[in-house]
Image (cartoon, rainbow, N blue to C red):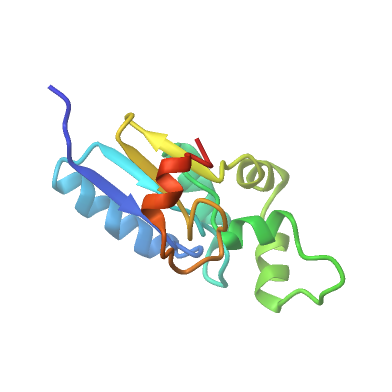
Length: 139
């Protein structure tokens, strides 16, 4: 029988210690389905250690706005010290891993996953989800 319990991770922002704590709780509860809604590594705590752990675990992961900015910095703008630190902390493997995230994922045919909105990873809300779902823009 399919276990319908799902742990949804999001906005880890390079906090490996908090991620490890959450994963212990998820394991303790016996939850095997885990998805990640992005913004994995941007932050001054431990982006490299967080990347290594997440790459090893290989959860379905969508691209967050900060994931995108790490691998595709905006041109013509000065990068924040946090972006510079994060990029400098990550190796080629982690940057490639980030670059390959999808904007959206359908998980187990029933769960549509995105960061922000289906159209914009930096959007904080969506007024017309029903209309968007009818058009199926990201599927």
